[in-house]
Length: 171
Figure 1 (cartoon, rainbow, N blue to C red):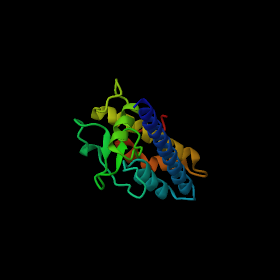
Figure 2 (figure 1 turned 45 degrees about the vertical axis):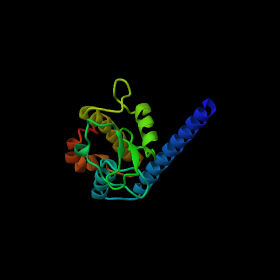
Figure 3 (figure 1 turned 120 degrees about the horizontal axis):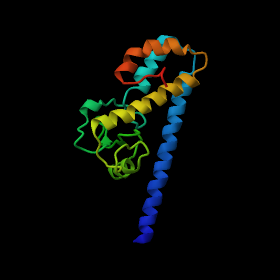
Figure 4 (figure 1 turned 90 degrees about the vertical axis):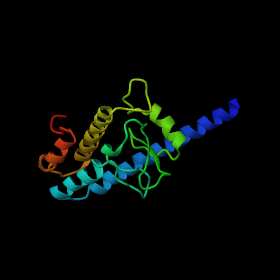
């Protein structure tokens, strides 16, 4: 039994590492694809549609989900509204594959802002976590995009950034 438990933990750890690498690979590929010459409007649209929109992380899905539709009486091991088999972390949006892995990951997620790494969170904690995540994503995009007029893009995105509680210029 102890050997089997160690084996299961190794499998889970390997799956999480692979999923995290895949997520980072997709994120990097998305940023690289966006590095092409774009107008301010195209940059604004990319930031709003791809960086600031909560989506199912499963490849080929991308179903949008809205925090208002999350029942904060339940845990942040989320499932996609399009496909119940898509299980992911509500903190970092990592594809977890199974409900069991999603629950385990949520409790150990580095973005989990609850006091005791709980499965459940309040809406303010969820919002604060994603504000930080969105700020990082937008800053990385602006920093990594060559030849971009950052001020013009930030100005174009101002209403949606403000609605998300993000102050890019102040960061």
